[in-house]
Image 1 (cartoon, rainbow over the protein chains, first blue to last red):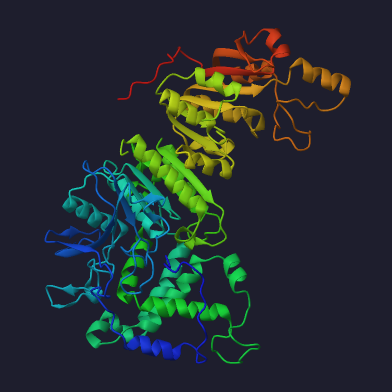
Image 2 (cartoon, helix red, strand yellow):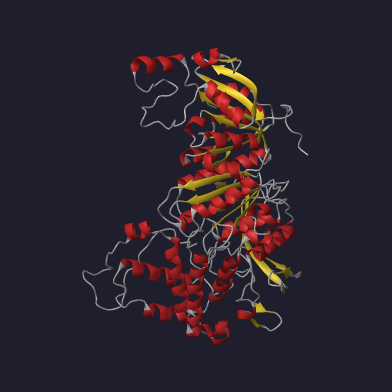
Length: 409
Length: 214
C-alpha cells in the first residue's frame, strides 16, 4: 500500500514537521503527469457511461493505464494487475511524480516472477483515483469545475466494471491471471465473481472478501483527519486554491501504522531517539518512529489527492462480496472454472490469514481449484510490496503452471 | 521428477486417467505431480505443513494449507472421483470422522496405512516390552505424530462402521511390493507392513471410470 519499499528515516530538520507541511500546502497537486522523461502511460476516454452501484452513472470517463510486455497473437497472455488503495498504474516503472521505482518492480519485469518476456501486463488506475483515471479531482464536464464531493460514491465492483470496459476497448476477452494485493486483492475476488468466464486464474494477496469493522474504523479516522483540516473546504479545496495536506498526512500516518507490524516497528525503531541524546520535553519528533511517520505523511501528500483518499477508502469499506450472494461467500464462486492462488502473510493484522482462509474455504465449498499459501514474514500487511522470495516463487510457479495448462507457451 | 515411494506408486496405478483427485496430506506433492504428468488428472491437495504447501505451489500444484481433521467439512459431496489419504490416517485426531468425510467427498477413497498388527511389531512388544519402532514407524512413543495406530483388522472394522465398502485391497510387503489381499483373512494382518484399500460409500457399485464432464 505504501509504495515505499524500505523503512527509511528522515533526518530531523530540527524544527519538527510544521515548516515542511506549510511548504507542501503551497504546492498545487500536479496533474496530469508531466515529470520530464518519465512515461506517463496511456489513457482511454469513454463516451459511454459507467453504471455505478450508487445508482448513478459516470459519463464520460477516462481510464489511465500502463502496459508492460507484448500481447501475443491470440491475445491469451494478459496479466491484469489491480493496485491497492494508494497505488497506481505505475506498477513496474518509475513514478512520474516521485521518481521512485514502481510499487511492484520486484514482481514485474523481464525474467521476474511476472515475466514481461512472456506476459502482457496491464495495470489500470482505479476509478476514483488521482493518476489520470476519472476521480473527484477531475473536472465535471457539466459544471466545468472539479467534481469534489459531487463525484458519485464508488465501489470495488465499479472499479472492476471500468476495468472490464477497458479490456473491451482494448479488444481483450480473457485474462490469463488477475493479481493484486490488499484492495487489489478485493478487485481480484470481484473480477472472479463478476466475470468468471473471463478470468482464467486469480491471485488475491493479503486480501479479504469483506472489510472488517476494525479496518473500517481505521479508514474513518483517516477520513475524519482530512475533513477536519480547514483547508479541505468541504472538498472544494481546488476552487479555493488550498490543499488539506495536514489532514491527508495524518490520515496516511495512521494508516501506515496498520500496514506494518509491532515486531517490524520494534526492530527498526524501538524507542530510539532521532538525532538527540535526551528528551526535548516538547512535542517535536523526539523518537525515530515519529520522524519516520512524518516522512510517510509528507511524501504522501505530494502524490495523492485527499478526496480520492476519501472515495477509495469508502469503496473498500463497502466491500462485502458475500453480501452480493445472499451472505454465502461460496455462492460467489459457484461453478467457477477459475484457478485461484491465495497468499497471506503471518504478521498481517489488517488482512490476516484467517480472512484469507475464509476465501479458501469458500472456494473449496464451491469445488474450485484453489491453492493457499501463507508466508512467514514479520513485516505486516505491506509484505506484499516487499522482497518476499516465497511470494515471488509462489506467483512464478502458479502463473507458469496456468500458462502452460492453457497453452500460452 | 522424483521416483515415487512404493506405496504411492501403487496408489498411482489405481487411478484412472483424467480423474479429479484430492490428495489429503499431500506432502511436497510428489504423487500429485506424478499424476498430473502421467495421467493428466485434475489434482488438488490439502497439506498441514505450510512449508510443504509452498513447495507444492511453486511446482504449479493446487494445494491449500489446511487440517484434514477440520477442513474436509468445507467440501461438497462427491466432487472428487478419487480422494487419497496415504500414510496419514494414523496421525488424525479423529480417524473415524475423517474417514466418513473422505467417503462423502470422493466417489472412491484410497487409504494407505501402516499395519500395527505386523508380526515384527507384535514380537517387539511381546519380547522387547517397549513401544515398537520400525522403518515405517520410526518414532519414539512420546514424539510420534502417529497417535491412532491400527491393524488392518481394526481399519476394516472402522470402514464398516462408517458405511464404507472395500472395493480393492492390497498388502504392502517389507520389500515395498504390493499384492492383492483378502482383507478379512488373518494372513495380511500378520504379514503385511501396510495396506492400501479402495473404499466407496456402501450402496450400488460405482464404476471406476472418470465421470463424464458435462
